[in-house]
Length: 434
Image (cartoon, rainbow, N blue to C red):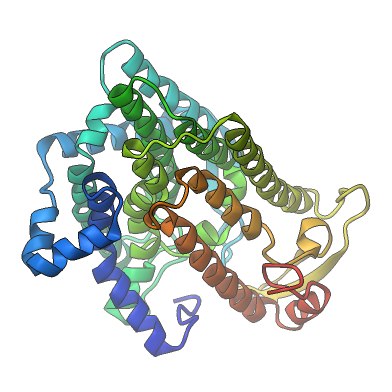
């Protein structure tokens, strides 16, 4: 492989990979069951499993049904068509370790708008009731778990037999290759980018569609939508809108530019995102909370502010890169470090490291408002049960680990320049603390 995947000690790496491969699938089903059928109570689910053991898990686990496969297939095909056919500006991705530079078509915002308008239109005109998705949610998750696992096997085989670029290769270990992936930029044909589809057009789009689904389901069950659900749905949709506004910037992040297409990224986006990321709204369907106007507006404003800061962090760095440092950051010329590095084929290149603005506060400060955003769209559930907050805890762990992996990668890439950068920007994520 062009770069090492052992960012943690080997024992920790293997233990975490094997545990995630074996524990994540049943956890998705247990979370759905607890939210929908066990009143959100972890204790109630635990007591059921304690009494019934593995047979209890087997009873909980729904079988994939024809309607579940049909919903998944129609959604996936619709998003694939939009990805290929909608017009969009051509965007160059970052230069890869082997010197390749992928080309993307930036049409995510248009696809997002078409998806939501189509979904709401189908409901409004009585063609398709989104409540059906909620009613078959367990079967859909079950189908996604197995279908996405097969898809990851396809990616593994493709990486061995028909890689799309020289940014591919094997570590010599089957588990690592399957988990982390074989290819950095896998494509079907010339134009269908697999990671853009799994991460953006299926994962993020399904998040938005399910957020709307939960809102509609609560309306159909109760004849109204609680203010807690409205706050949760609005904040999630604002965040996802922000994502698609910034989609071209996402193609420069670790997910796309450094993590290969394997179980970790692709199964995560195809299964983990539509289940775990949407879970606060899933809980609220059957647990409507009346917040009151003042509290609801306070949470909404705080959440939107955090999403804006997260967006502005990314915008600031993207503008800095686009102009090669010839821009203003908070009204003045940016402070920067010019860092040189070598590609895997020995070519010397340079990068600019921004050390002012949001990026002067901490090396990964943008994770702070992202975690707070997740908290604010979860807190409308209040604190009767802890499970709705699993996503916030998971996201915090994920981003702290990602910050460490990114620091390790940059230290290896930039050497003395990264050391200088860390001297100027001392904190990794939280200014003054960490």
